[in-house]
Length: 333
Image 1 (cartoon, rainbow, N blue to C red):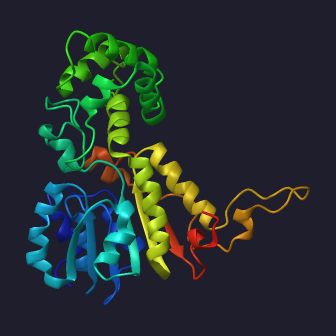
Image 2: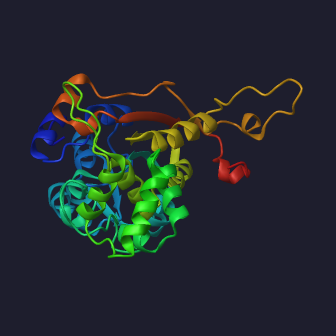
Image 3: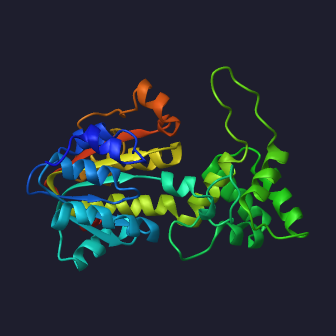
């Protein structure tokens, strides 16, 4: 080992949430192989490499994250590899690198601190920048969505992915305003949403949530197909993990956590019992491909929340691979 987890955190400007808990859940061992499907700033990767003499294969679709990985390559040599692409495609990405099985997969779902803090990436509703929000350099931007989609589609995106109750009013205001001038900057859209939603009342001891938070979250999830990517990533992990391999997932809002919770519950056989009057469901009849060591979630400590407000909504879930076939192979996925 080259450093403690605490030392790793101190030298990494963007500290991942629940870092000690993630490493503890992953249980890294010498000579094993782990996937960090959401490399970002590399905090989890560093911690795992420092915890055991192992190999970490990192994946990220953000070109800037790929550039940042050069430092880890210098520090850890052939114990670290970086692959550019989406973690939902990890089976293909690892297959192209001559790897077909791993001992652990860790996923930190959502936008990274680097992306949030750099106004030019267009994720922030508090600093002005181009209305982009793409994690990669390809595909539709958030500006494309608000300037070209019809009102109903915009409203559905904001409601489904942002759980924003005023989605229809926001969509209507967007469509009306864009006839005068297209949306190009983040603060332009944020101010319009704030005018529709209004400022929430101040709460003692806690900063109120910005009124554009849910709308920006919804656009980001849509532009990057984050929930679809998450589902593909969970199924890919099921295919790649060896028996006793560990799946460790950190999520930050209810939509993500619901996908992770349902996947782990289903694949571990924790589904509602079938009625004695009804045939046994396919899920109940399929051997569990995972087991749960704990049914609940792991949350940040109060001290971590105080140090890093972004940790407040984080939830960690863990599942361990059994020796049963993955559900894609049985036709029940």
